Length: 196
Image (cartoon, rainbow, N blue to C red; front, side):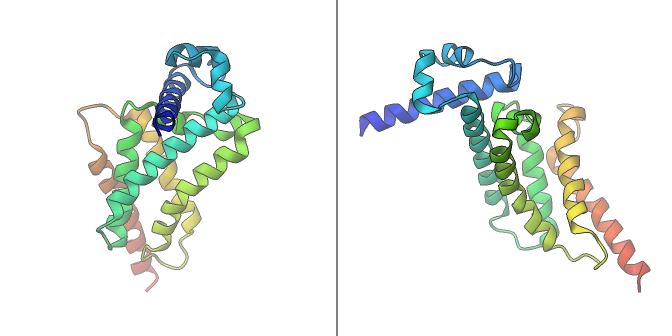
């Protein structure tokens, strides 16, 4: 039992170190030797857990998606209103990406097509998370002619870009999400009234 705990701790430390280096140096500039040095392991020891750097990136990405998904599902747990649920997801997503966390940075900054050998796995992980947003957008009371796929893509693009212009001490994640949802809701209402 102690061996499994020690092994799990080593993997956590390894993933934390890899996430930190991938987020600060970039995936391409980070070597397995850098990661090993950062977490106090021998370079060969990493290969016991992960066969290559691509597999380690996928594991880091998966951990980041797991953390983000858990936060989002927790935020949605006690709410039924579709607009409020969307706002809560966006608030949680924005909050996670503006925090100085390495995992969130890896998810946002390392695009799947930047690592062709891991692209399919990274896309699958991204899509698994975005399925939550897809279900929330599907539940919105919108006019029939609204392209829900485009709406989802607009939303995820907008919230992912917040990290570029966000200033600490300025408008917070909840206010940003609230305004974004309000704008989409007003547009939907206007379209609905115009078609009557």
